[in-house]
Amino acid sequence: MTHPKLNRRHFSVLSGAALLANFNSARAQGDKIILGQSAAFTGPAAQLGIQFYQGAKLHFDQLNAQGGVANRQIEIRTLDDGYEPDRCVANTRKLIDDDVLALFGYVGTPTSLAALPLFTKARMPFFAPFSGSMGLRQPFNRYAFHVRASYNDETALIVKQLTYLGLKKIGVFYQNDAYGQAGLSGVTLALASQQLQPVARATVERNSVDVAAAVKTLVAAAPNAIVQIGAYKGCAAFIRAARKAGYGGTFYNVSFVGTQALADELGKDGAGVVVSQVVPSPYTASRPISREFAEAIRKGGGKVQANFSSMEGYLAARVFSDGLRNARGPSREALIAGLESLGGRSYGGFDVMFDASDHAASHFVELSMLTGDGHVRT
Image (cartoon, rainbow, N blue to C red; front, side, top):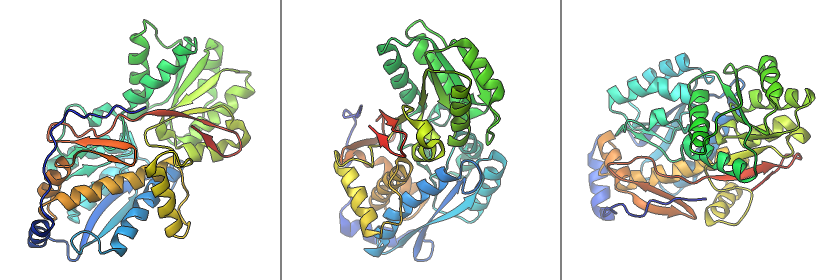
């Protein structure tokens, strides 16, 4: 479901001639626009970084083939952080020292939060983190721009769906870090609005599949459903172990789990697992953006897998490119102004709204279900 913010001021866009003239007179990075991305490209969360990057690169490659923006090519410089905050901090310092135009597509809450004081001090735009943490959104940070809905948005829909079905005994399995705490907070807040609270909660360490203690705690509480706030390997390990221990309830995950990665990890054991989504389905042709994405993959030779994570990367690149076109030049302040001037617009059924007082562009959330044969139904 979507909640477009249509009451915001729409800003005018510079004329093409003026944009090009101003763009070429500003600070340049040679003949390229360089973006920096720190994400997991190896380790238990690797598919999240890989898939997001592939979707973004798909759009940038095709845009570059048409001349880029103001005759400048857009390039993503990637550094692997393995989904570990300390490594992300080192990567972020390097990217800032390398004077990239913006940080783009960071993957994860603990890593993004670790980068927050660095990009804020450097006054560097931080665009489309693959995280719904409220800690990145509140208080407002003029350098952070969010394309996806928040974890509070996702967990509110999950709890609404569960209680609508009469399932009020809800357990929470969450990652023992800032990401897990953000999801737990969202679930607790949504339950409290209905005078409920989790019947049990248990954790798993980041980048771990040691779930035995968590399974024991949650299965003993016999919840109707378990909301999972983790990455795909840990969540898959928990689902398998809980079912083996006799748990017969349902599992709900937030989008960061990595839907296709979770489906691949679980195989037939994934049947019936629900995941909230913050971008339209790439598996159906019901929205124009889904058809556009499918056509982009076809034109790119079919090298990118269509899934929710690559769709999110593609959309992030689309929105970023439009903000860059609005900019008076390839400087950080010009980019911020260009993004804020986007106002409200729809990307084929995915509505966004940026302005100078709100950088949370979307509240789009819907639910999908794994079918057990590697597919996802919305």
